[in-house]
Image (cartoon, rainbow, N blue to C red; front, side, top):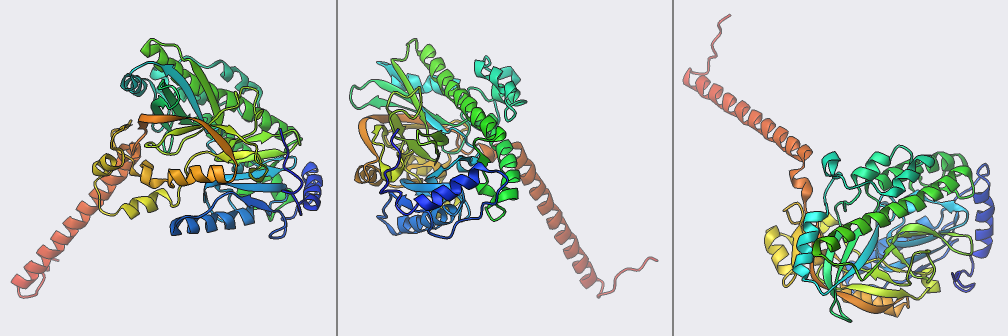
Length: 471
């Protein structure tokens, strides 16, 4: 793979060498860098006031993030948006580290990824119908009664200190897709008209537990050598025993995630009586090591160099929103993007802010307006308006900026027929129902207290203001 050009790293070499020495020695001090010491590239431009505010927040967070002692370079993609307090790597952020792996830079949704299979000349509605029956969205796994056959990769969990004991979670969540922005999408290839199906999800509970274990170890080690570094930016020294074990765990969980995509695609193809003509995938929430030895963390960023993984066919997938095509791209290994491209359209505001911005609306009406002409389904039966197209950045703008910054080449598109998402499955979650029941019981108690007080006041008024004294 192509390393970042010397020009792109101008002004960083001295700091990088210093950080390299620090990162190699787990026992040495690693102070945070001065603001502006380590540069990063902004591959994003504002076209609206909302985008300007979003970019300002992203830039401020990246500026703070790049003070982390291990980092030597950074980049921001056109779909970037903040992901937490200032100093947190944003969605659409890339950070290159010397001899360090940062669990917080891939977060709990390790190996969030997109996979596609070309199903050929089939009815897209039949494909979506089959998928709705065979996939699983929402919280939790399939449960023991609904489990699929265990994937072979689970056998490798026991040999890794970060994965041992997670075999049951890996089995229970196999063949599931979770919630939030995860989806199953059916459409037609623009080039041939063949029906294609795409899935978007990460490593589910086993990945979340791996992240949690990695963060605990990283924070323990980083607190010793760099107490000024925010806890969320803690790292494991890559060539240490724990760093090597965590790196191995990431590769195993990547294999589990690929198998998770593949089993959903295989079951749908089998139900349709066809064999997929092609299957490929790419992760966009992961850590990659290039030939320069550095560890490139993509937080919602698509690897865009030709040999980023042994199983890549050179093509990657960039979904925009449920009503827009999924872009099939070939990465251009752009130096200013550290070899990455966007992972989607991104947001300009949080989910809750978007819902508030919609004002008075009925979810069903909003869905009808925004998804006209496509078959959109919510697995839970309740729409999630925070996942509608209006929640995301303008798709045309993201596409323009992919071209403008030379991040990827669009070689084909999957034009939408329909999609399935989890929907607002938590609306009927048991814990939410229990909380609502407690609120209603408390409200009933308050109403009864007010009625009792009112009756007492009326009785006093009737008796001339004297209360009965039976003692």
